[in-house]
Length: 403
Image (cartoon, rainbow, N blue to C red):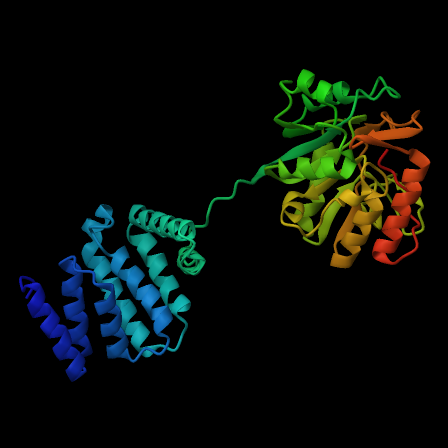
């Protein structure tokens, strides 16, 4: 039987359809497969007719994919396992004919068996799906691209994430060398970071400083702004350059010592509802709380000079740094409202492995230059407090602790 020519097999297919001989039909289809004859329309019409498939659009997709997956011409690496793949093909067809389950549910077990039989061939199939989806998008056929990616998702091997869970990124906006606190500035912070693990992402809000220090050996990545874009925008740029699961955002005039990152990150692994940690926070009445015990405390707001977040929650848009607060002040209060609206927790963590000099860039300045303009600090603070109050429809009670 295996030596019959194509016309004979097609006649056998027609006969078995007419007689309702499912076993004979599946045998004929297997012969077509072994001959390398993969006519999409024939396979789909035969199986739809034989099994009375109702959802022809779904069956078309999966049956078409089957004819490709089990093709030695498409994937040379499957030749040694061709018989096993044929059996899987027959098994799927039989299941499809008698089950009311969705096409996705029926196809997923096949994908798992496919991987077990030949991992290399399965990876080749995954690559084929991804390539076809990409080509569909290039041609403007988003429908075909989405359908192909849906089939790709049924394989248990996920697309590898670029995030590294074993490390952390320190995000640092830098305007100057903190003239008000010369003993605590960007350079002393880089010295501190040479004693701890993790990436360092720097956003230079000063071109001159950026070009001077961009190649510092402790800096992993940096962005040099053409002007001072302010705190919120710099944080946004920094978080977009982050590739680790957690990001510690800190002022350039802060100091950090071994043990701080571990203390800030540890609570995230225990409670998925925690979205921000930091060593200093305050409650809704604006009362500042410095950690003076061994217990972590849920607070209403975390001070902005040093805090840790889940990177993806910002990169995927669950939370954001509002650019309307540029250049500075009230970022913490805005974030506290975002977190409260989502039912996320802010946790003040007991750690003393840090130091904050306090407003090293702005302490003795009455105005702040930004985005090629300037504003009085008192005016800025009043403007941002008013903006946050109206944005969230509440009275503003928090104080800006970012410095």
